[in-house]
Image 1 (cartoon, rainbow, N blue to C red):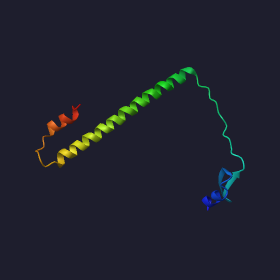
Image 2 (spheres, helix red, strand yellow):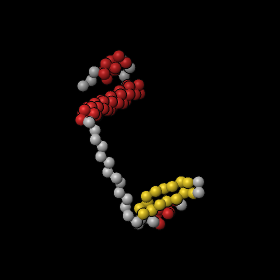
Image 3 (cartoon, rainbow, N blue to C red):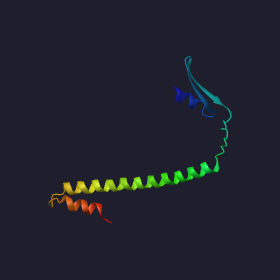
Length: 102
């Protein structure tokens, strides 16, 4: 029902969706609503701290993504070793090969 009403008035702009005890109401407008622009003043010291934190978080995110990729590779290599029937399993050398590969 809601979607059919929105479709019926698609040339108008939905500005409000009210859910009240009396019922549900959709408010439309002929003109596109404009959002107010809010300017916030941040002290320079706080701004610099936020920039440094942002750079640190980006670096941490990159390292975590690389670590996850490495972990995926290790799991895949272990699966190959266990599934492989062609050679006896030497776990010590397999782990060394996985951990110290370049």
